[in-house]
Length: 192
Image (cartoon, rainbow, N blue to C red; front, side, top):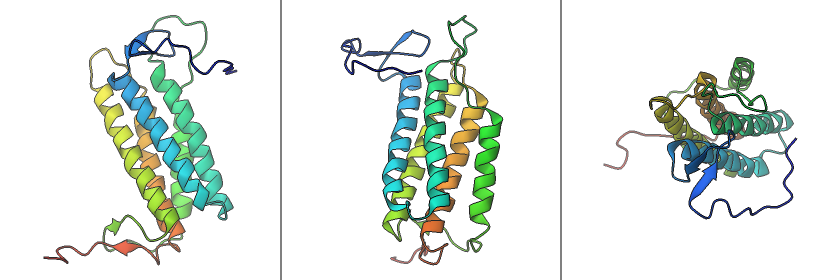
C-alpha cells in the first residue's frame, strides 16, 4: 500500500532520485528518464481521456492502460539485480500484453484497412491520442536503449507492453475519428 503524507522530502535536492530498490541515481539517468517518459505518456493519455468519456469501452481500456503504465514504471524503477528485497517488486506480465493485443484487435475490427499513412489530427480526441502515441514510442525507445546497456536489467514484457500501447493508441485515434472516416490521410509530395 502506498502512503504519501509528505510530498516533498528534499532527498532529491542533490540531483538524485531513489529507485524502488533504494539505490540512488542521477535524475538524468537513462532508467529514470525511461520511467519518467512512461509517466509522461500516462499523463498524455489522461488528457486524451477528457475527450473519450462518451465511448465507455474505449475509455475503460485507456484507464486500464493508465494503471498498467504505473505498474510498468514500478517495474522499471526496481531493476531485477538479484539483490534480496524486503518486498516482491511489481512486474509487467505477459497476460497484460495479451489483454492489450485483444483490445487492439477488438477496436481495429471496426476499421477499414489503411491505404495511406495518417496525419495526427481529425478530432481533439484523435489529436490527443496521437500525442500520447508519440510519447509512448519515445518511452519505448528509451526502454530499449536501457535494456541494451550492460548491467541494466529490463523485464522484456515492458518493451512488448510499450510497443502495444502505441499500437493501441493509434487504433484508438482512428476509432474516435468516426472509425477512420475523419482521419486525415498523408498525401506524399502534395506540397512540392
